[in-house]
Length: 375
Ligand SMILES: C[S@@+](CC[C@H](N)C(=O)[O-])C[C@H]1O[C@@H](n2cnc3c(N)ncnc32)[C@H](O)[C@@H]1O
Image 1 (spheres, protein in one colour):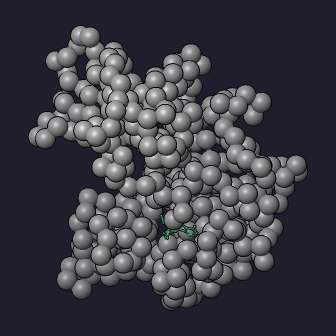
Image 2 (image 1 turned 45 degrees about the vertical axis):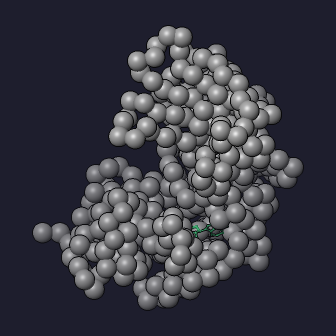
């Protein structure tokens, strides 16, 4: 019987996400050394190592993300995950996409447990790895765990959006939290020809990976790829409870219309939803099911900045004249969504990989096929 660690490495190899030159690092770094005693599985199962050491170890080597902190480490929150050890398949996939080779200098944003940093240290040498974590307690725990396995990269406590100029320029920047705006500091601190890999999304859709190459002109460009949903960097988190806060039809005026469009098409379709998010990046969508019923539901679109909302009621029996839509506020959000969906269809339903991003000192701009065709 293989020990759980070796089983995980074998599983990553079988899945084809572990390139040959990463094998030694993944074999040397054992994930359980980086996990706290109390961990949470994605389905909410909480396991304490002292009470159930076998289950704890099984979860550590399952190919799942392990939630390691809730509510920024405060005791009185609602149980919102704020740090995790990412899913091993995603860790391996991102490291292989990063296209990093021994001797390169890498900046990692989002140290979390330190597991990813340890893998980078094994391949590149600890002197070439700088990792930044915004949460002081997590940064300290990662430092200790890394040292416990004999590794001493530079672990900085701070806001990764600023990068770490003291060690720039880097060959690669990898972020392990999602952004809606790529901080320009990452571009400025990467060598021309170097790469930035980060989970990226909009309030509407989280998300994909942005794989950017830094040019000699001080801008970074590249395509979107992958299908990942990371937690947001701390200051770009989507606001919570937006429906409760903004959608109050009893006391707000709204217009009523009907549509034949079902949310399955623009929202459930990964590529459609991603493209629509590029056209209305600040708008959130939230689904509320009628109690005990998955057939009858409402999709709410909310733009917190303007207080605009749209509620799109789905009643499967109500085929004619269509689904009822209410819209409130200065932005007609359902109309915008329908227009954005039509734009995506008219463009030939492009996959997200045909879309890309340019980041300059002044702005970031998404494009279709080519940087000269902004979305
Ligand atoms: C998914 S976890 C990272 C997983 C980690 N790479 C690992 O191997 O365990 C995301 C981390 O990003 C951190 N984070 C969020 N915003 C940040 C910021 N602005 N700068 C640095 N770290 C940040 C969170 O505190 C969290 O620990």
